[in-house]
Length: 101
View 1 (cartoon, helix red, strand yellow):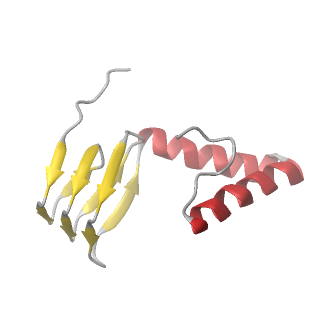
View 2: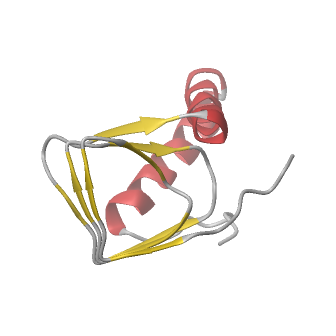
């Protein structure tokens, strides 16, 4: 797998376009965008997203959703409990136990 170059975006106004989350976004505004997450490392600092911005998951991010779905559907009570634990961590804004930063 080829590494993608890390880019820093500072105080940019993204409008009516696709934006792939990769690198650092600081103080950016997203208006009517498709924000695409593929599983790359990224950082969002003090960014704003309007109601018309859509969130799209592709590549590695889609595979993560597929894994969580299979774990919940096929993993019995322990699989369902793990998925619920992960989502509870998301609600609290903390990294779930067992996941590397």
